[in-house]
Image (spheres, rainbow, N blue to C red):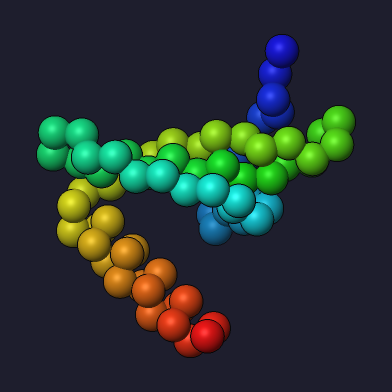
Length: 73
């Protein structure tokens, strides 16, 4: 059974629906980021999207997320 598909075609940027959950894990020399985003198909389904990044990129992302969320409060 498929939970849904994400197909990226053409030139970016690529936009996904709202990410409902996120998780990060340290793997050797990289950080694995797992996002669970809503996609439409037969109703709305959460699809797992994984990517790896350098520790520096992960730190930049963490800082950017903290700045963004602090502006929302």
